[in-house]
Structure formats: structure tokens, C-alpha cells
Image 1 (cartoon, rainbow, N blue to C red):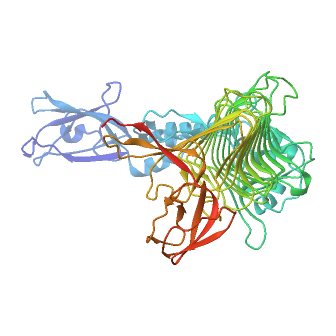
Image 2: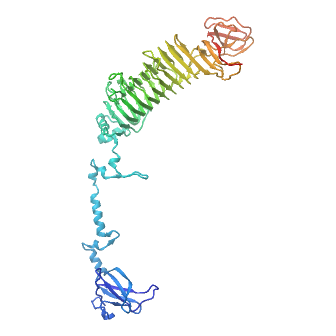
Image 3: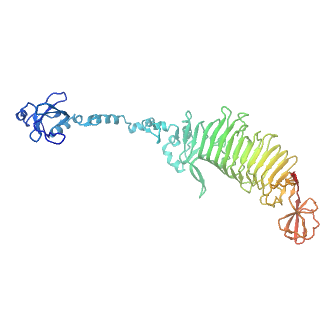
Length: 614
């Protein structure tokens, strides 16, 4: 039984004696009140059945059975005084402990959402719905884990859906091999496992990721359209031996089979990967080809390295499948070829239309950096090559199609080999090779029926043409043949070839240089009655006339006052005397005063062109 004691006051805190209080259950029934715990009716004190009376201090006291009740108060005339107190719990402490310890104890304690029992039931249901570790380890386990990207308007999706288009190649390789792959010591053939990883995305597309490691393969990996290949880097150094960092395919397949095949594939990005071939096996690292069903198109290769391949990239396969084999709209960038026979071999009728190759480095090229058997509409830029042999060539062009090839901002290191050779198989009046802003340290040789446009290049070697070659130079810099005196001819044009050049007047007006016929030097200082510039009408060394009692320094080039077609190099400087009798034998010397001259070849004749009215 619960004992209730409390004071009844007004809003000012004044006690209210002589008031009555009655209790009602939740159904509105009046409840029995007692004067003591023994059950003595309250009427023995208040004089009114089941109504407690406040004493002179406004205090109420009564006993009642445990429960929750509404308290209603009445004045001395037994008139109801609002408001009532609703839902007042009245439980003896010992009774509460007993009740809560029972099976239904949790139902007697309230919470903001109901009772403790309600909350426990909801929590148990939620726990039961959670996937177990066994369920999470199944193929559908990711469906039960949510992912929400940071940022506004992101939508909740499952981890399975999030990772659906991204495959880690190690997911298809036995775990027992992972450590050796990462350490670069794996000797197990992984071809089948890697192919399964690529094929897993064949129907929907996505990315196959290669974590850092060395992946041995012995057969060709066939790429799938729309499936990108992504590695984690392809650095290499030779400090204490061959050291590979990042993601590398260690290809040990047959000579006839390429490491990667993009035959008839479209829309693939290949990046941040390295390929290591077996140098003695004449292997091809990357093969691109098609039979036009479909064509190979929109392939992008970036940040890649190829080591010790006989052919780094075979681009087209000599029309073996189709006379109009299409392998166009390709992009190669930021690549590195080391110790390869050929870097690129381009050999298909439409092998390179709308394609570009840029920022490619070649180290220790054995044969060619670019061997273009059939190519057109291609732009090659920002490439550099180190050539091993005198027979090595940076750009070897044959049978180029009717569209232009643009080579710009490229350089081969001074020394061995040739910068470019162009030998069209058939006459080509439409196609053209455009050399734009290159540093040309090795010879350029163009043979046959062809056109070439050279613009803004730094020419440090020879240009030789044979046949009906049309070679036009605009604003090139002619610096002489590397390692040779400047009077050694840079341009050698065989009849019926045509050559024309236009450049700005420099600080020495090309004195001492062997200038080809039709070489124009623009004046840059137009004056009334003058000329726009001068043009070479007889190829030879550009000389200054002999002056009696003149000062001449070693290295200057002089011609007689009366033209005898010869040029003379000052080998010993000083002051001249009278004009000597000039010898015409090759290499013959003569002295005037303290100056010694040596015959070095033909002197050039330059005539003004573009007369300006006075």
C-alpha cells in the first residue's frame, strides 16, 4: 500500500486547509482511500467517505493500493477545484521492485517511444535483420552494406553497386600468390587469371586495376572494348640491376604472340602500366589491328613504359585482313620506350587518321622510334630519342598516304643515326611531311616523289633530297652541320628536286654558311629604293669581299673582288696587303700581308628581290 503525503497550496504558495481530495482510476471510478496501512477507512479522519481532508497546514495524507491515479481537489463546500492531476503514479518502493523483477517488468517502465519492452523488441528485430559475418562473406554480402558519398544530393547505394564497375585483378588471382606478386618475385603464369578479370567486365564495361606488383604472363591478353586498364605506376631504374616500381606485366610469351592485343577494340584507356619483354625473343608489346568488323578506334594510352620489346607498338598489320584496315583515332602520351628495336610500327591503310602521339621518350633505339609504313593524318609532338647505331632512325617514313604527317617539337640526341628518312613507295603529290619547331641534330634524307614543309626548326645537320622532292623551309635556323665547319653544305639537292627557304636576317647574315640555291634572307629593314631581301642564285659560301689593307680575323670567309666562283677561309688573321692571285685548287692557300686564306669551295651569289619603290 502506498502512503501519499503532500501540501495543497494556491499559486501564491499559501496553504489551503479544509480542502478535500479524491482519487480516480483510468476508467473514472473513485478509488478507496485509507487512514493507515491497515486499511482503516479515511472517513474516520475526514468524516467523508473516500475523501482526504487537508489539515491546518494544507497537508494531505492517505494510503491507497499501488497504481496510477488522477487526483481531483474540492473546496470546503465540496465543489471541484480545477485542474486535476492526471496519471500520478503511486507505488510502494518494495512493490515496484517486485513488479520490475517479473516477466512483465519491462512493460511497466515508460520511454519516449513506448515502454522499455517495446524498445527491446524493436532492437531485437533490428539485430536479427543485420547480416552475419558469414552472410557478408558471400557474393551478395556487399548488398547489405550501404555507401553514401560526401557532398550534397548524394544518394545512398550499396557497396556492391559502388564497386560494380571496378575490378581489382587480385580478386581473380589466388591469395597465395599475392605476396610474391607485390614483392616482384612471382614465377607463376597469371595469364588465365588476368584474362578472367578483364572478361568479367566485358558486358558492362569498367576498370581493371593492377595494384603495384609484377605479373608474369606467357600468352596474349585480349582487351575488351570499354574495359579500361589502370596500374599504379611504371617507374624503372638500373641502380644495382633492373628495378621495377609500380604495376608491370612480365611478358614471357612466344615471338609470334603480342603481350596485349587491341584487335578490333574501341574505347579503351590504358594507363600507368609497364610491360617488360624478353629482349632476345623479338616480342611485340602492344598490337592494334582490325578487319573493320569492327574497326579499332578511340584507344588512349598514357603514362606507360615498354622495355626490351622488339616492337613496342604494332599499329596495323600490313593489311593482312582488309585492304582498308582501320586503326585510327588513337592517342599515345607520356610513354617511355627502353631498349626496343622499333618503338612504333604503323602499317595499315587507315592506320593513324586523326591520331596523335605526344611526349614519348625513346632510350637506346636500335632501329627506329617511328617506322611509318602506311600512315596519314597523324600528329607527333614533344618526342625525344636516343639512337644507338648509325643505322638507327628516329622517323622512318615509307608509303605515307595522301594526308599530312606533322612532326613538331621533337629531338634526337646528337650522335648516331638519322633524324628522318622519307622514301615514298609511289609518287605522292598530295601527301606532305611537315616538320615544325624541331631540333634536328641528325641528317634528314628524302628520296623520290614527295613534298616536305619545314617551319621554325633548328637545323644542326644535313638535308639531302634525291628525286623530284619539293622541300620548302620557312623561318628555320641553319646552324651548320654538327661538328663540322660552317661552310660545309647543309642542304644537298639533287636534280630535279626543288628547294626554297625563307628566313630572317640574323646578326651575321649567314656569312660563312654554305647557302643553297633559292635561299632567301629577308631584310627586315625595308627602305625606299631597297629590297625586301636577298636570294641565293648560286649555291655556295656567303662571303665578304676582299679589301686591301683590311683587317680580317680567323674564321672569316672572303671572295675575290673579281668573282672567280671560289670562297676562301681566313686561317690566320691579320692585315691584308694587295689582293693576291687567288688559287682555285681545293684547299689551296695564299697570303696577303699577314693574312692567310684557304680555298674552301664555291662562293654564293646573292641578289636583291622584292624591289621597293624609291
